[in-house]
Image (tube, rainbow, N blue to C red; front, side):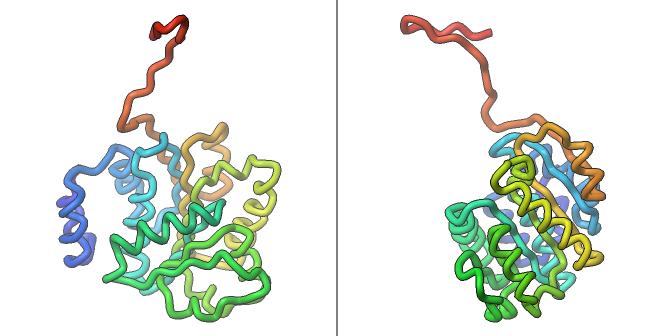
Amino acid sequence: MELKDLSKDLPRDIYLKLAQEIVELRPAQEKAIKAGLLKDKNMLVCTPTASGKTFIAELAAIRTIVEKRRKVIYIVPLKSLASEKLRQFRQRYDEFFRIAMSIGDLDSADPFLMEYDLIITTSEKLDSLIRHKAPWLRYIGLVVVDEIHLLNDPGRGPTLEILITILKEKLKGVQMLGLSATIGNPDELAEWLSAELVLDSWRPVELKKGVAFEGKVEFY
């Protein structure tokens, strides 16, 4: 599938900008679209690193913000990753919609976020925003959970699990999109999310296994 196949599904100005960078979609992106990404389907995408998961989230976000006039929450596990995503998204979409990051004071509802369309945050901060009853939460149309496999992490997992459970309960009708490079129980997690499961093994650089010994490498 090529990007031009989505020309009718994307706003023309955004499509023209993306077309300067992207010609052909990667396998996981094509699978996600065919599985209902742009039709409000909940989705769990499990593919290798650098296989194009972030762009899957971008496509869903574009539709949510521009067509549905709803906000997008993008949850990441680390503040450093939030800053990276903020730079990446602003570079590509700053002229089309408003993008903000909320990772700081856990005792604030951050009312300024009412003015933003795409909000990047950590699970801990979003949990705080919910507890402080941030009024703009009712305008969310899409929740993206990056690195969702951290549900299995003994430190961050419980907070993330409780957060997703609360979001599912409080935000009825919101599209949920989980992104993961590796996870041991994708079918079980997809069922819990009531989501379509997208699996793919394609990666931009093939991985090979081998043994290095005395300056030589033997692959197998």
